[in-house]
Image 1: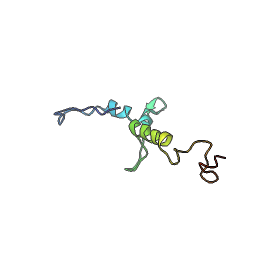
Image 2 (image 1 turned 120 degrees about the vertical axis):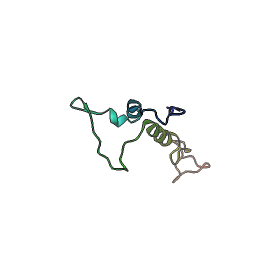
Image 3 (image 1 turned 30 degrees about the vertical axis):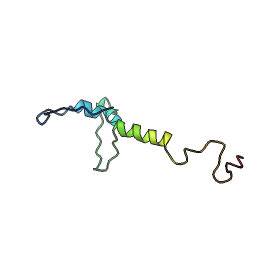
Length: 82
């Protein structure tokens, strides 16, 4: 996903549909109408780009990701693969 760059957009209208598409939770409907989220400034609405980055971190870079399934840091060493 990339953010569209618009030069000279000082007077341009905000594309609300595009903004809503960036936040999966805003796709939620209640009784056929868009849901209203009354979060505070530190609310939980997260854009898709952040969700993807967090997922990538958890899957690929989280703690101990260098370990193989056969190596346990508590009981094994490279000399004693268990």
